[in-house]
Image (cartoon, rainbow, N blue to C red; front, side):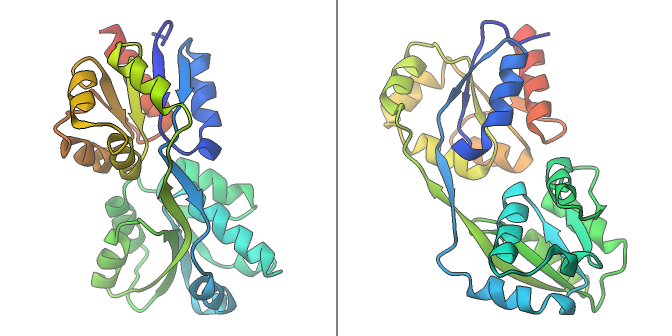
Length: 258
């Protein structure tokens, strides 16, 4: 199986697209970057800075994205707090990509759920015994409250701090991509988060959407993103298993060769 002669649209942020582009091109496909989101710093860092000063009060840190790891550690570095302050803590990651980002900083990840969702991560953390334990949860401004709600229900305290914002982006190639979508030149549109779905469809008129969705297939990274796509009246042709870009590429190959 391969993606030879297939054109794949990538809607994730520009600074996170390189590995996805490389993977598609390694399978013979043509990847086009069409970033519908951008990652920026939070409006202020006060809550995060207070949490950093109180690191020794937490039993563990929970990360649900690579962005949350990188932005949190960048902030620690900017405050001249050595990563050695984190060595004794438990780290929990939603998936292998997040885990590898944690371990890149020579920090040991305690646990990754078998299925890469916030729900499964919360249940996974529960197995260590969380009653009366306190967790730090650095996350984006659009993150769901599943982790907080579930762990709080299990008797834990979760301190959530925003370490990055996901904002709408208007791609520079909007008009050329709109034309290619209408002409049927884009084989697959990929979505790696709910925000990429919402922002993608906000860029086009209703008439345009009706036309190109008839001739384009859509691939999503997981069940949560799939549910958002369905709200636009579209059933994803590919739901990645596992919920990674590798899983998405493999799913596209199976779908396009069927």
